[in-house]
Image 1: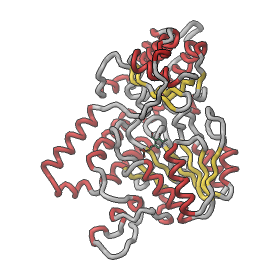
Image 2: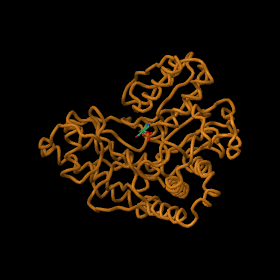
Image 3: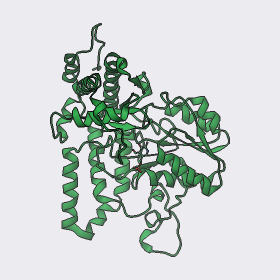
Image 4: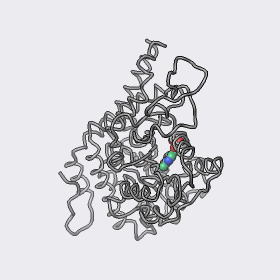
Length: 423
Ligand SMILES: Cc1ncc(COP(=O)(O)O)c(C=O)c1O
């Protein structure tokens, strides 16, 4: 079935959105999440996904297991990072087994993989100037520690990175780090084309998949990807601070060594020997004890994705964001908004960015007066994240309707312009 057959002519009505929900093959998944306040429109699942009943049950189950088994549980838990990584690889990443781990945070995984590449290859590091801060900061530190240049790639903030521009910057570099879906604009890079172009320029690519994993279909193996990292608290619904993941293509594993020589990556871990020697395979990118409780929720998220099918999820993401873009044009463009997201669904992930000169106060007013929860990204973006497993088309319609009404009525002008600790 296809989503969103064109509405003939007239304005986009709420009835149209309700009709899309009625025909949605994924509609039943919404009930598998804790929905809380029925009037609240949660469009921030791109920051923190909702709690699913499955995740709650998995967390309760692992806590019970801890209580009952104590240290004997480690016989089953010790390899959980690899098992969960394989499940994520199959459900969300397009990765065959033995190439992914669920462990640490995205920031730490980025440090491990980028550090491993810089230790093995000469050349500079390339990263977009508008990429997520943690990526730029980690790379700035690594480049300085290894005495390498850091090349900041400039580009159109509302377009995916251009293949030629990335390839030119990659000449003579060791590593290019790119977000597959940009955190602010939602722009999606062409993974296969960029990977091929960067390889031709002699460098490797490390993909940040935080805004892609569980939101759109990912083809790591098929695209010839080298390395990737990403989080599980957004579209995998594994909870605040849940373990992240990393991917290292099998062909690179023997050539790279993590800069964190932890005991979980040691060849004969429990021999407790005098010298470090990394194990063969993906296990060499582990550091310390796996976060067993958090991994239970990651596994629950991977299992739900596998059941729903990532292709179906990606199709619904395209349809939900298309509705948001169309509603932007119809209801918001005349109110001082501009679209901060590419118009072609193939060029974006599952969130849209609505730009407004007074975005911070509009965002605060949405939360305070309209019971809509989006988030704000500096300098002028309100992000609407639309995770396909629990977002209804009617939610998109209602969120835009409340946003338009609020700005028309000048409600945001009551809000303070003062910044908050978390935006
Ligand atoms: C693109 C991207 N990279 C990295 C991170 C953060 O990683 P960490 O979980 O280590 O804080 C985020 C967080 O939202 C992100 O959006």
